[in-house]
Length: 243
Image (cartoon, rainbow, N blue to C red):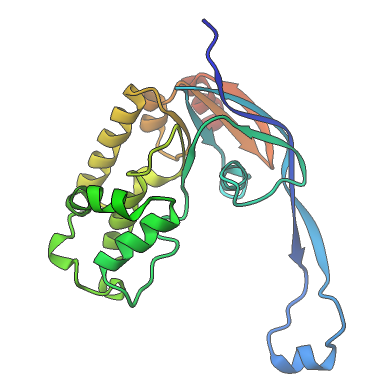
């Protein structure tokens, strides 16, 4: 039986305008308030065509600046494409900029509800999952502490713990397996192994070859905004290491 599509991308293009001059002071702006800042175009994604089936785990490989994160953000709806189409079949949850929406002056307790609602959860659902979130993040004794007093690692643990409670069909992740310490990374891998066994779809960027090879069904390699290689993870990793 042919597997259903989870994600389909056709002819995707994304271009950014990059300033080519600096105006560092207010005086510089006041001298020439009507002058438009000079820019140049940067094509971050070029004619991307991609299909991901339900239950498939796809790794996106490539050097820094190759277009990997831009592609994930387009899939997540954070960026709109300039050309082409993106079709998402199911509920997609992005694990990209974990902790967006956190308020540093509010307590961890308050931020759990704030961030959960931003991610589309109801207050009742958050209450139901509250203890699970807190225990997974290992922050119970710090619940009444303002988030500004948390270490970066504690904030990421909390953000991850809230996000993975979201009910989704498709998970889009950017180096999320690198968060926290070794103990927390192992917990994260266990969570996603469970979700994989349940038939969830994963699309993620990772620089960990062992993870890509053991967790993924397929991999693509992006260079200068284009897919230059696609296939089994081991084959794509070998090609990537030689390029």
